[in-house]
Every structure is written in structure tokens, then in C-alpha cells.
Length: 630
Image (tube, rainbow, N blue to C red):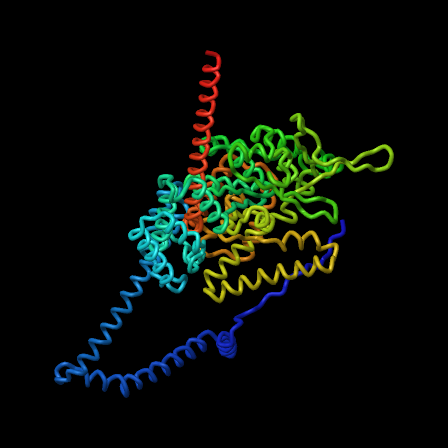
């Protein structure tokens, strides 16, 4: 074996690098011996002490003599006492600031480790007392909201006419009145600001007055329904969007569970990849079934089969072009969704489910499957197609129910030549439309989006953007937004030019990452590695090197089934991150929830009235038949 006798050594610095350090080192090198060094040091110290004595004798000592109490110099005594007081105040302020910083860190750590909402709320309330109060008028138009609230109260107290309330509410009811939905206003808040909460409660009260009022000649049931439907359409709707992220998508479980517990779950739910799996569970279950699912059933969600040895994995990749078999995922989804179609799920729960899929074909745009665009597609088939990330699962064919209820291919296969036919396949929706914002705007009048973001290639970027705002203030936040816009602009340029090697990455990074309220998975995701704890990173000590390591670990964990402990930890992180956004979601969705409740009550009343009317007609027909028989 040939061994070289030479070894390479990286360059390194010798001695001090600063100008002062090099000057001192040069003086030391000029000395002949150690005793010479000691003599030089003593000489320099003596020179500096003599200078200090001269300063004290010429400047400080006259001041001290002038301020002696026995000289009957009152002004001098006051000066000395003032200096002592300022020194003590400065010292006590430092101790006070250190104590406040210690308490803030304690409450933040308690918020990060909270298991229940009560624990988190207690820590958040205590932290809110320690923080400086900000002027809310700089973040929203407080005067406009107060005047509107006073106007609503005056009208309710003076007017007994429902038509007057209906006329006024229909004329001017918007979601973001005076910028009261500003994310900065609700950042880290436990409760909705008092004035905004009073406004939302007043609007909800007047809507319920219209809904609960007796039907009379003044306003009929049909007029009430028309008012509620028109107002709800003008106000807009909220959608919950769940991103992809493979096994990291267990974070979505905690997000959805918290929204269900607080009764803030939107009626429109959409997602791609693993987010579509969570959406399918929510859209096919009633409220009691959802609560039961989050008690225990969600822990059984295992997406991947065992990879096996390296030869088994290599053989599977060569044969199918994917690391995992998709049959396990299909069986799990069929068990969870009971072979329901999009239309059947909507009829059963009233929730709108949207799942995005992409085509491997070059010129076919991504699709958002829902009960309007593809009512007969089977949900489990759409989810497996949306989870088919290239290299992870093979592309899938969409399945639908025919008129007889049998499963058939949704698209007819392509005819190639005389013998073979190729099925039309679809793959992971997150490749081109991770968050189907534009499609939902067009189809369902959605103007407010709550996003749960768990993609491992996006969350580190969003956390860095949050860090820029936290440490750099308003300027840092603006620079972070500019950097994000620059990345997306460059991606759009690549797509416009059509540079083939970068088109896939440009589509992946050029999409929308955030919504109006964005719940971001922490960059220190607990599944990544036990050594990288959330407490270490979220405290503000993260750097780009550590985030890059975590990014690689997240990618490795994303293609494996998480353990029971990892599922619990990621779900708890999802809950904690959602607790921080509850105030913003309540502000944005409070009036919308009241409108939905009124629409549900009025529709139920109309169904009851129709049932009673039909029963009376049948009784009259039966009584008429009996009279004819007699």
C-alpha cells in the first residue's frame, strides 16, 4: 500500500489578530529575558499610576474638598447625594431588568412545554403582564371600530324594527374593519382585544336577533334566509389549508384538534399530500366522530410500509420507480373514509373537501378535486394520488363510482398503438399547488385562509423570516418579505424562460407559502433528532448551520413512519402553535361563525315547517279518502 510521506495541514493563524494584541506581542518579543518583561510591565504600570495620581490631585481632589459637609457647602452635598442616587438607581434598574428577563424566559419555557391549553394560557397571561404595553391604535383604527360599535348599540336600543337592523347590517359588514385583523395586533396575545371582541359580540347578537325573531308580516322566514345568505356571501368564507410534509404532517393533527376543541374549524378544508389525508378524515366525520377520532384513533395513522434491506429497496425502485409500496396507504385510507365520494361526504357532513393533484404530463395544469368539479371521485383514490411524490410512491389512477355504485377509472385510459392502453395517472399535488388558494377563491368565495405549514423545505425559510422580524424589528420584517418576494420572482423567471433543469424546483418554491393566518411547524421539529430540542432553538439561538442540519434530519424522518412518542410530540407542537393563533382566528372568524349558525338554524326551521306542511296535506288527503269511502 502506497502511503505518502507528506501530510496536508490547513492554514491557521499564529498569535493575536488585533492591532493592539500584535503591538503588545511585538514589545514582548523585543525584551531580552523574562525579568526584562517584568521590569517593562512595572514601568508601564508606574507611569499610568502617576498619571492617574496627577488627575486625582489636579481635578478630583478640589471637587471633593469643595463638597465636604463641614465646609457648609450645601450645593456640594446635593451633588454627591445625586451622584450616589443615580448610581444606586442604575444598579437597581439592572437588577430589576435581569429579574424581568428571567421571569419572561421562565414563562416562555412554560408555554413551550405546556401540555394543556389551561397551562399554556396561564403562562401566556403571566408573560403578558411582564411585557410592555404597546399602543394598539398604531396597529388598527381604534376610533373607527369604537364608532361602529356605538352605532350598532344605539340602533339596537332605539329601534325595535328587525327590518332596520337587516337594512343596516346588509349595508356595511366587512371582515377587516379598520384593519382589526392585522396579524401584528394578535401576535402572541391570549385574548382578543376588548374593543374588537365587543364589536364582534354586538354583531353576533344582532344577527341572532334577526334569526330568533318571530316570523311576521314584517320579515318572513324566506327574507331572513335571503339576508343571511347574501350577507355571508358578501362577508366571504374561511378555508383551512393543510400543506404536505409526509410523516411530518402529524403536526396537522394538533392544529385540527385545537380548532375542533375551540369550535373554530372552517367548513372548507383543503390540502395536498399528507395534508389531504388529514382533510379526508375531517370531511367524512361528524362532530362527535371527530372528537372520538382525536381521542385515540389518530395514532394508528401509518403511511409507509417497511422499506426492508437495501437490496429490497433497490429492487422496488428499479421495478416501480418508488421506495414504498402504496397498498398500505390505500388500505388505511379506505378504512378511514369508507369508500365515500366527494359528493357523498358533502351531503353527510356539510363540509367542503378539496384535494390537489398534479399530472405528470407537461401541459396539464394541477387540479383541485371537490364536490363541484369531481363529485363522483372516491376520496381515498384522490388522497393516494395526492400523496404520490415522485420516488416515494408511484403515480396513481383516480377511481370513481358509476351510476351503479361500482368503482371504475375516473378517466378513460390512453390508447397507445394497437395492443396496449396506458391509464391516466396523477401525483403529489404539493409539487405545483401545495395550497390551492386561487382555486378556492374562484369556486367557493373564500377570502380568508388559515394555513398549517409543515413542508420541510418551506418551514426553515419561514422561521428565518420570523427571526428577521423578531430581531430586526419592522425593518427586519420588511427585509424578510423582500427576500421572499425575490425568491418567488426568480422562480417565476425560471418558469418563464423554461430552463428545464430548474423547472421542478422553481414550481416547488414559487408557490404561495402562507395564508392570512399561518401556523408554522417549528424548525426544531422534535422528530428530527432527540439532541435538537425545541427549547434550545425557539429561544432565539438558532443559526443557519443548525437549521441546515435540522432540515436534512427532517427530510430523512419525513419518509419513515414516526413512533408513538414522535406522534405525540409533533401533535402537541401543533396544538401549542395553534394556541398562539387562537386570538387572530377568533377575530377573523367570529362573525362568520355567527352567520353559519344563523343559516343552520333558519334552514332547520324551514325544513321543519315543510315537514309539518307535508304532514297536514297528507292528513287532509287521508281524511278526504275516508269521507269518499263512507
